[in-house]
Structure formats: C-alpha cells, structure tokens
Length: 117
Length: 74
Image (cartoon, rainbow over all chains, first blue to last red; front, side):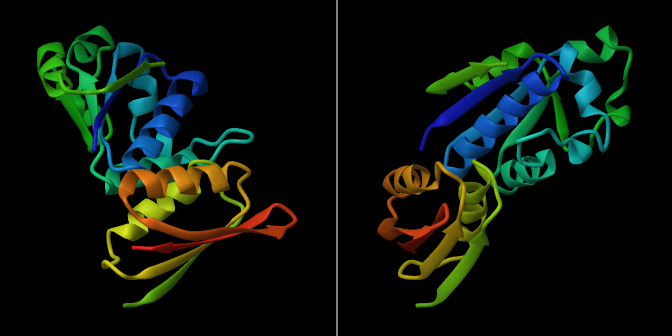
C-alpha cells in the first residue's frame, strides 16, 4: 500500500476535519498515514480537544482519531510550534510526536499522496 | 471460517469503511463479514476498499430506504 502525508495548518474545523477524514479513509485502505501539524494547529492538540469535537453533518472526530490510531497512523507536531506557541509537549496530547521538518520530509519521501489543509 | 456482522447504520463516510478496516485486523482469510450501512457513498466506497485491499465483495445489495447490505469474503 502507499503512504499518505497530510499537513494540518490550523485548528478550525475546516483544517482539522478534512485532515482526519482523508487520513482515516487512507488508513482504512491500508496506507501509512502521517499527519503533520504546523504551529497554527496547536489549539486543536490540547488534551481532549479532538475527542470532544463534533460538527453538523460530520462523523464524531473521536471515531476518526481512534480509527487512524488503531490502523497505525502517526500524529507529528512541528517542533518549532513549541516555542512559537509557548507550549510544552507535556501540555499537549500524549499520542503526539514532536518532530522536525527534515525528519518529516525523510519520512514522507515515498508518499504518493499529499494534502495540506 | 467464521461469519461476522457489522452494523454501520447511521455512520457517516468514512466511518463504515474505517470500522471495517479496524475489524479486518481480527479476521482470518476465508472469514465472511456482512455489513449494514446507510451512508450514501457506501456502495462505491466498499467496492473501492475491496479492490484496494484484495478482498472479495460478494454483493452489495440495496435494501431500500437508503440501506445497503454488503457481504465481504476475506
């Protein structure tokens, strides 16, 4: 199967929902999924935020999140976000990896599909 | 060989497929999975998923009132 790289650039539903819907559909199809969050997404990565997220007409975010994780998807926050948004990794969700852009680019060099929301 | 049923009624795209994919981790080759779903994209989505993952879609029947029943052989 392939690899799918998704960059999520903000914490609005219009950033977060398409990232997780495409990500969960890809993971369900057997793709390796890497979700990379830039600093603007930090508010959505506080513990419990995604678990409680719902929107009219959309599946509950918690279900998409659990599905992606059960199928091996990874959540990575750009390490620059910590200083940029004055947060520590301990203040964010514990299933989040902190990673640099170079590692991310190396991780996704064989990704056949990329999205940015 | 075992048979399983998954009720995905009321779930929205891509949840039915996501549930199937998670369930698939526990199934063995030859097992059968019957899925009930009423998401409008389900018939196309289950066909695409089976094509991609190498599973056999035995049928996906219109059960009326927007409901679909699919049977998948693993």
